[in-house]
Amino acid sequence: MALAHRDQHQHTYGEYRTWPEEARYELIDGLAYAMAPAPSIAHQDIVGEVFRQIANALENSRCRPFVAPVDVRLPKAREKDEQIDTVVQPDILVVCDASKIDAKGVRGAPDWIIEVLSPATATHDHIAKRRIYERHGVREYWLVHPTDRMVTIYRLDNNSYGKPDVVEMKDQTAVGIMPEIIIEWERVTRRLAE
Image (cartoon, rainbow, N blue to C red):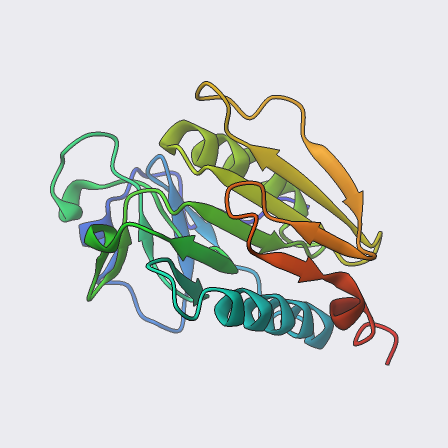
């Protein structure tokens, strides 16, 4: 299922900031995609547990984890914020360059992004957002598939993601760009059985 467009007009972050807060959108190359309704409890359980593990692992690190909603502005070059035409809100993101963090959110590519898939967002996350994250240099991108209990992992190599790794949500998975972070999947999946 594809996410609905707000309209067929090209938009910028300047316009986006004037829209009502109750109507949430992401901008990808100027097109506004309506955010899915409130996620399921299973989605939120996964996001919460994975974020907790990441935050604990990064407690004394220069890297900072964030959980949605946080605006991530992805400029094509050096345009002013108001002119940026790509703004996303990943489920979880980690930023290691403090200069990218400001009062509005994050400007520039996070180091690591995790999206937890739902039926309403799966195609969008797999195709549109993967292309955007690759183009802007997100070093590692995880797609967590709750129903199939698997994770698709893209790692940037020579400015390209290439073929992803696909792992089961069991045992542990180390983060390629931050091997000190190990996600313990049993702590995540036990909540799905409840």
